[in-house]
Image (cartoon, rainbow, N blue to C red; front, side, top):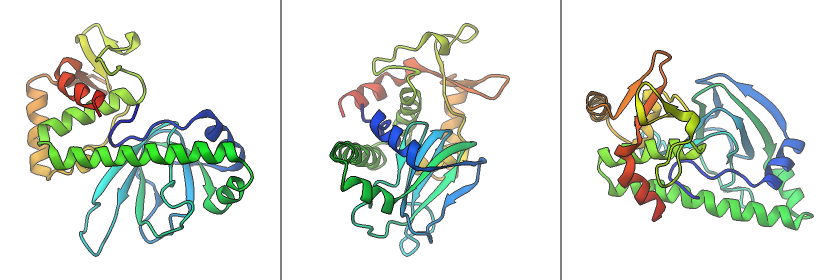
Length: 242
């Protein structure tokens, strides 16, 4: 399954290889893993937590041109493994994260001798690129309300909280709120959500306020967000068809 803004999980052969060959590091929420002035010359495998990747071009605009999210089991830095073409990106931890980091040089050396790994990584790069392209399609073709529905759907799909037909995994239901509500697996900062949707602060605040007032989502005592999955029917259908 390919969804916008969050690339698929890597296959086991890639995950096992990168865990064995890489350095493990931990970051706190709001730490910068890589800034736009540094070469994007390494892979980041997200073991746990959420990292935002911003596409940056200071000559065009002062804020990221697009934001993608990487959660547990996802791999960042696949764009220029072979070509080493400069690709300015800014990576920021949105939650506490644990990552495995591996240089592109080491990856290229391994690809010369391991055909199975090469084919697996090539396939993963294609799926990752499709995920980013679908995300851009959402931004260019949908009004803010639809973008938010897609984002909630993507977050719920990314870890299996719901399936493409809107069925909620039993442990993620709320007896207090009703069986149509599902808990988002990640509590993202408002600014991160706004950036993914590429909205102004006033537009995003108004949109989120409308959803809250209409009980499209509610927050529990711990601050977790529960979304009414029935409101996401059209968004899930759109994702199924893409």
